[in-house]
Length: 527
Image (cartoon, one colour):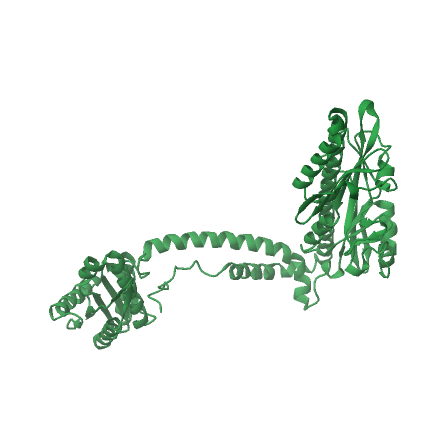
């Protein structure tokens, strides 16, 4: 139930919501530019294609930068641990193996992104190894340390100059020739260690959990524009169009396991150019090369030697370039739809913010904070408007004034909180008892009034009685107390030539007489 033009019992709104405002602005703008769209159709299509290409190239380049920066950080970690190990070998003496193991364990405890950290001596035998599990790092005991001299990570890193890091292929981890179950991607960073007088003393190997960069790409694929794909240097899918096409170079029975099988021409272009875009299947393949070790965290004295580079790509479907099929209007209007939508959206946001601010100010100026009815000032303004309308069209208009009987006793006995609860309950009952067109307001304290357009004295008295009975039936719960209340009411019909003040005085006099007659009743002023 409402009281006047502003809904009672709720905050005044600032007009339609953002989607409606957006539509109201967007659709007329589309109609305005419809006449010029035919001439610019070809130009718009080319511009749309260039926008999609630029966005996809930006997405791919950004993810390449993120990957390279993250891998550069891991390379720096490997070089740091190798340098720490070299320092301990030179300075710790017989305690060096124990101290090195402690450093590796501490590093693993802080950096949970690695699957394994090893120090192999100059002969390839493990001196210290830390395995990382979901529950934390595990220091591998001596009996389980093994000869790893045949590992490519050792063989290819042991003869590198100081400050160098060798990065392995991204592949599924295998121990003793058997793949982990379930298969686990891993990427290893190896850096040489030097002892006294620069003598080569082995290699530090960091095995990065390979599913971390792949999971990053899967999350980035959720952004509109298509999922990311990644292939190794031989074209095998590391992150493919389907899970069963990935890791075909290590897992048997995986058809469609290479980029070349899916897009032969694109594979040749990618191998030749390293970065670019090429049409495939009516759409577009955007690709760039990930080179481990290229990143902004590397110092000039750190050299990274990757075993392979990867191709990062995203496929854009054909329907991303062409407007959806439809009537001629939509075919020609699709070109400017994106631009108009952006302009309309921001314009609608600005207007909504302005209207919300105005609505808040309007509420402060017009609504009683406790009862959510009109406050005295706005009630009188609205009443004057209704009075002038009734006078202009020769219509009847009545006014009801009412207040709570013995309200002071409620406040004195149960406190002002109870009084506030009573006033709120009275306001709600009045909203339910009055018509949609009636105007309700709180004049002050426990005193209220209602303006009833198109209502004579008899109908006004009936409305007052309806309200009186509704209030009499109320039960207001306040803490452990159940409060009952009644109201006294005074009704007056406007006279010819009478102003609002006169009408209020006569209704107030009728209210006074109702109170003097015993309260909980309606009084009325003669017409």
